[in-house]
Image 1 (tube, rainbow, N blue to C red):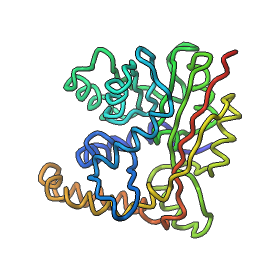
Image 2: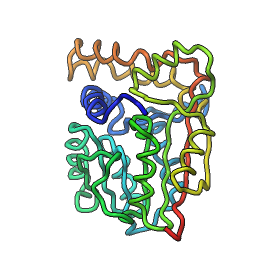
Image 3: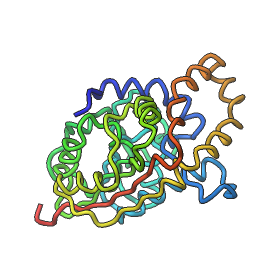
Length: 275
């Protein structure tokens, strides 16, 4: 079990999310570029992850989706507009709750997309509440992965689906680099792909699909830096040079690992129809 608790994670995102939200336009998750010659703008590269992850859920109009660790709301709004699903988002970041509800209202979907302050380690919803669960790079911060996956299983209806995407360990080499990465992101653990699959199965899910696309995600960290730097002057004008310097300092460890050390997994699984 991690020594990191939910309050720590909430503060972590409250501190970083405002600037990241500005740079990434509501998509705080990772990016996806096919190769160095892929000239997709940052917003498109970020949206590719939203599309890849949510497509595996097989959502249908009217279904109720839990966006667990919802960030500032852009992905949940996309889910509603693309699939016609209702979405409830939860996060332990006060900034993200406020920003996400503001974004949903501006998009005209506040009646179908709602965001609440909540801890996915102990969800307030009754058993069998949701048709599907999306956890886009939020499990990485769970103090106990076994507990949160069991909570997901509990609140899903029989036959309900879960898809999560997250970092994975691909190489144990250079442990100091890995430690910097994990400390920066407040990761209590960094499972391999096989360990992610085993955790899902142990929680009662049947894994139906998975992929590891690290080279096109973390492996493209240089492209992200190049894209983000084009926004630096604009973002600094809003937040101030001091805030940008402090933000950069806090996130240096993210870039420490070699690009082949950190994978990126997408796992889709189902709760038994028998419950």
